[in-house]
Length: 114
Image 1 (tube, rainbow, N blue to C red):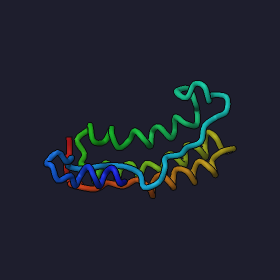
Image 2: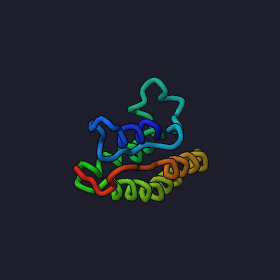
Image 3: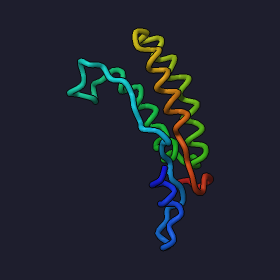
Image 4: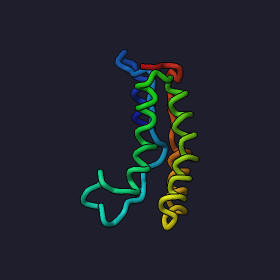
């Protein structure tokens, strides 16, 4: 989030209104059969729903704050999807999703919207 703090608090007038990022490195699980073709990866695609959710919410007119909150609420749904479709990796996937949920942060004008 150092980049976010810098971007929001620039002194030269070129600052951004808000910044969304992660306080920890973004990690996810992947299926070994799709490591060369990540767009086809059945596990990674569920994580992509989480990572893309903030942007999609902002583009749909939600504020920064609402977009982050909606994305965090999505975790429960994605955990259930892993349990139903891929029980063999559900435990570690749920752990990684919760980790991302806790690490997702926003700073600046949280009422800003697109």
